Structure formats: C-alpha cells, structure tokens
Length: 159
Image (cartoon, rainbow, N blue to C red; front, side, top):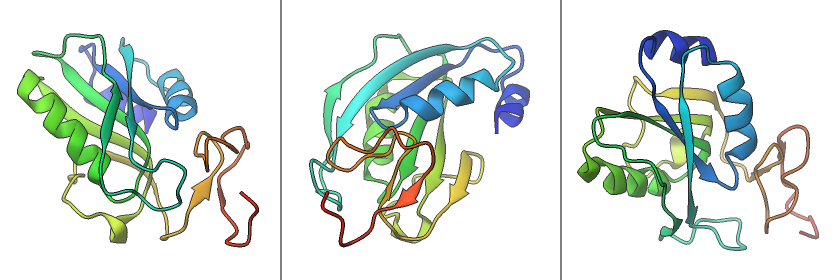
C-alpha cells in the first residue's frame, strides 16, 4: 500500500489525516512505508462509545489544524465498518476545497457499509467479514488496542 501511495503522490506533499484513536498505529506504520514527502494531522470522532455496534451518529471531538484548501488529503482509518464516519469526514472536508480526498483503510467490511464511501481508487488493506475486531489500534471500550495482531472479539468476552 505504501509503494502505491508513494507512486500516486510522487512530487506532491499530501496530508495524512489519522482518525484517532484507532488509526494511530496503522498510520505510524504506513507513513514509514511511504517515500514521498508528507505531512500528518489528526482528527477524532466518536461513533461507537462503549458498544460493539455503531451508535448510528458521528460526532467530531477534535478537528485537524492544517489548512486543506488545494491540498491532497488522505484520510487514514483503522476500519471502515458502516461507512458513516467516512461519509461524515467527507462532508467535513469537501467544503474546504482539497485538491483531492482519498480514504486509506486498513480494514474494510464491504457488506456492512451503508453508504458508497470508498471508490475503486481508494486504498484498502484487507476486506474482512462482519466481526467485531480488536488489536493493532482497534479497541473495545478503549481497551485491547495494544494487542500486536488483529483478533475477532469473542462474544462471551468479559469486555
């Protein structure tokens, strides 16, 4: 994925916007695999709370600091599940007139996506089944992010 992004943005300085908290680990690994110059920034959303299912509403907790007008923006997500967060981010960024706006997602649940949020030109690491996953930045009630790999959360878990 890093090689493809490096190729696609050669000669440009895109802004990678990590969606906190889940994408932090993936973003750190991703940018080390990219050879073009870049900037990073972060935004924070809330859509799950302490539940295993999305609440259906997305709330902006922290906006980015960078000016995005005329810039190439890559939104970096840990997972695209319902697609509501990505749709919210696009509505937030498009009025700011970026040169381009793409989504980079480590994980993608195709059958769960409620809106057409990822086009064929965006970057997807792995398509996964409809399971609640944890580890490598993905959490359940703000816990288990530090697991070194990604696991499906056991339904009988005490978490």
